[in-house]
Amino acid sequence: MQLTRLRAFAMPLFAVCLLSACASDTTETTSPTASPSKPPATATSAPPSRTATATKSAQGVPALSTVMPAITAYFDEYNKAMATSSTTKFRKTFDKGCINCQKEAGRLEATFAKGQKYRGGELVFSCAKVEKGIGGSLSHVIATCSVHQRAWQLLDEGGSQADSAAASKPLAVYVQVARKGPDKALLVTGIAA
Image (cartoon, rainbow, N blue to C red; front, side, top):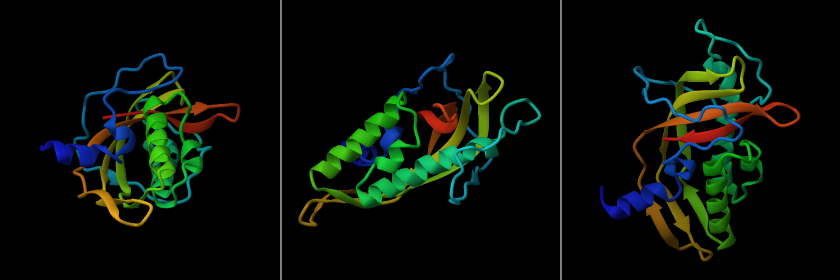
């Protein structure tokens, strides 16, 4: 992969510049290494509910449907941040201890502060399964997802193209979700490739 292609891919692909998992208040931070063996089921973009009830699969691991509202909210609000040049709602979808999430929100804000804005670049995701739940409930759950980014352009204040990239290939991503805060809302607490 050429350096310019790598830079273009890494630029807006937020926390997927993820060389390490981030997590706050975890008892275990090792990412699973298995990749999905079957095509993932695409998540819907229905309005997310951040207070989903826990359902468990036969193995005692929370079902994917339990954590999908938090994952859907994270990616939907990232896409809205790209389109609106505001990360306010995006920041509410992840825990403050998620280092990669914080870095990506900060990177977007630095871009917006320069008067630049994105055209395109939406993240498209699907999640196949929950890899593991740490602690018997939703203390920390890791879901296996596939993410790719649509083609994008970065426009400067005058509307001229400052940078661009073609659509990326799908990338396997692990998204960690946990109940956090006084209201025990489901939030993304880590993300890593």
